[in-house]
Length: 290
Image 1 (cartoon, rainbow, N blue to C red):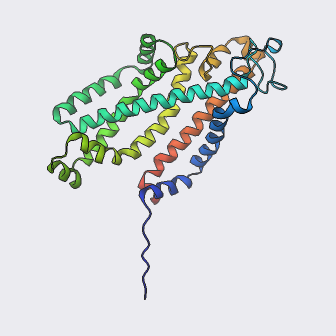
Image 2: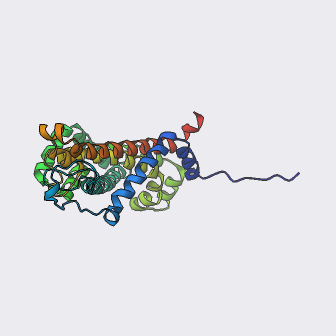
């Protein structure tokens, strides 16, 4: 009898299979992909730019030449909502990339740098995590000022401590494995261990953290811009669009000026959270037991 030996799927293939079986995660992808396509491609098909002013259509309702209506100075709400999504996502992705880099390096230093480096690094992380986040956020924003890249830096500096603890826990367990101890015994340096063994074995933690943190960063950017400490006008972001529409007159008489950017913000955060939860379950082998 001939026996056929089938190769077992790779960990990435199993993770992808778990992800596609997660209905909420798939729903998040279905929500997010069209939104990203519209945000990135709108200059190609929309006949209005975010800061174009139509004096004949100030505070115009949805319909006609302005599908989502206009604001108090005649700017197209659809164009500003899509441009706001582009800026909000840029701030979120850039800040998460920076905070992920900082968090990984700090966690790796704690795990591979020896006892004194571990103690000093973790005390710094403890200090960063004990600071009141709202007050810390406002202080950083007042120090660095408003602007896209200032907002990126502020959000990144607020977000890295949690990841550093996660990376430290993963690498503390990894450094006791035989292949890492063998590499160290053969003279491998810290950087070799970090990028040859530490980084590949931390990809799942980094991916899940980044996916969930992007949603949090979008909300942080919206909050800062709403308070006037984030992306300044006339550049559009979902936060400063909501700030511009906060008056009672606009809330009651021109609801489209806050409804559409608010809905885009909610949908984007909801979709990214669904995807992040799906990735977390996909990288957890215990999901196969459920």
